[in-house]
Length: 148
Image 1 (cartoon, one colour):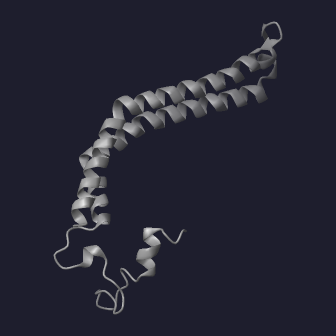
Image 2 (cartoon, one colour):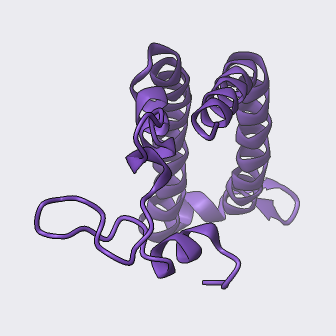
Image 3 (cartoon, helix red, strand yellow):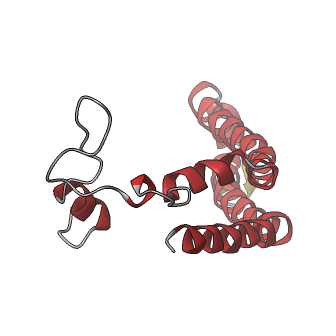
């Protein structure tokens, strides 16, 4: 942890140190959200954003893509490994010259990785980036307003 880290500064300065009544401890500084008349704290704002429908939609879009693609890739990878260990005759079958099924399947693993990366980037660009950027701007505006 660097000394310039704002969380370190907040903790080292005594922010959110509490006495037995829950009030800021003597000698400690109150956190910005503890000041009378202060708006919601940054943590409250982030929790509010996390609970919002827009954030939940961005997360759902992410999960709907990542989970099936991850499972598909893992099944494909495990099928390659299982075939290589349990069916060596199949994997050794020549396809063209010295190239056999195992080499083709191994190269297909690389190709699959690049295709999935391309599909992920395309999905993010078309289905999530704009909504996530809008959320980010809204959150920054809310945190700027809370700091006033």
